[in-house]
Length: 404
Image (cartoon, rainbow, N blue to C red; front, side):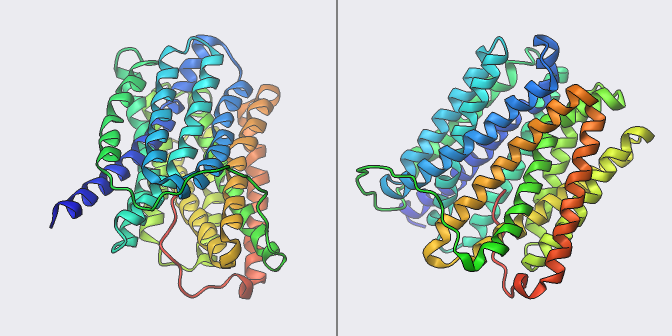
């Protein structure tokens, strides 16, 4: 192996590590939300707003810098994303109230939007001989980073010092190898001078609008479920089951993402319509179990439901992404996929806000129950539509899964 090949290989793994660490950072606040609420006395509605500004901040970062990275190159954009993520963790370290939490989450969301598209593209370009490996690494980094960020932060908060600052300081140190990776990384595209970035509304061709609508509804629902778990699951478990161990409540979130990763990697050969239908069924079953676990106070049902939810998320979202890519005409693929992700990230944020403010009025359990009923009915309806219109959703050769 010559020096250039060795450099590309090292860069490949360090850029994958960077994606892992960026998603790790976004999961740090999840097990800490309850501690923030105790310290600064804000409602569940405000908590979900804090979470949702992250999801909505991802969209402009992704749209703007996705275009820029095609023009100025991947290295500069990945470096900028890492720098912004470091700023996000630093903002949380000095936060002394709700305003600081909002600022930290906005910066984190923008950092994720900046980095992930360019870094995912860079992985493919650094190893053009192994596109499946690039897909596995990016998928594993997305779900693995979120899972590890939640569980390790929960352990730190439960047993370590400075629970509200320490995890972010550790994260700042863990970002350093990512910067090394960017330094070593050879540029993978020929950069072009940027004259002006012009954002335009994505266009969906009339011939695919019905199928696009079904795919984007599945993306919206799966992200809405993940939003609920990332923002409210720890409070839900503590308040309603009386379990005050942060490690366990964070472990539920990690379990969901771990199961999602397993589904995306091990079941990637399923056809897209099968992924979407089976994924929706598992997702709804997991949500129902999550709700039933409270009145019967069953930790076993809580854990098993979390696994089902994660498997459902991994399958349905992977199927929706592959399906959207498959139906998109070459000349409109960028527009169609951008629209899919934008609406999916709105699903990550807005329904969660609805749950939070509903919880302030009718209680957290009933708010989650209503959420489960609405999403359950919608999910089963989508399964029925796909089965009735099976010819429009069938596919022969699914591509490797795309990270969520």
